[in-house]
Image (cartoon, rainbow, N blue to C red; front, side, top):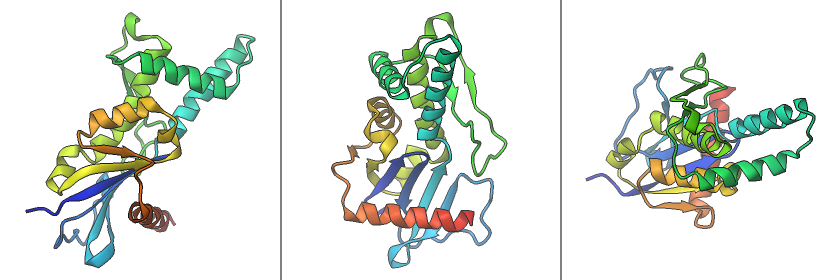
Length: 211
């Protein structure tokens, strides 16, 4: 039987999702560079499975900057903070959308040439609420495509412990995390020292991989 464990999710500028592998797991000797999940040594001779997306809060920031620039082109001045709060409120009121946004404006480590796209566009889905909801959903769904909840469940994950600056101030992202990962999800206040240590190790391993 798989050991019960938590997955750790962090959505800041970029996005990371990590889970400890069952005891006895050994990664392949020659990792596939096109694989979306990487494995790093962890505590007690176990391994940490990591899906790390380059597209997170930075995508939302790019969207805000685009809107502000459009406003400026129209002769209007609006603060980025005002645009952000209004678009999140609009998305919160728009509970669902058929609009689909793949938000990979920066590509991904395993798919460096992938670009962003918008599909299923209709005249009824062009409001700020629809677009922002679709963008937040796309950020989470992109991560889910790299490490699906079904795989996490097979590894014994029973809960997702989440944190990060982009997530903490965005209730729409929180909703989409709960939609994509049907586990109990804790946000911020329940993050303990063990989770913090995992995040530190995760970031160190990612930095070593990129150096």
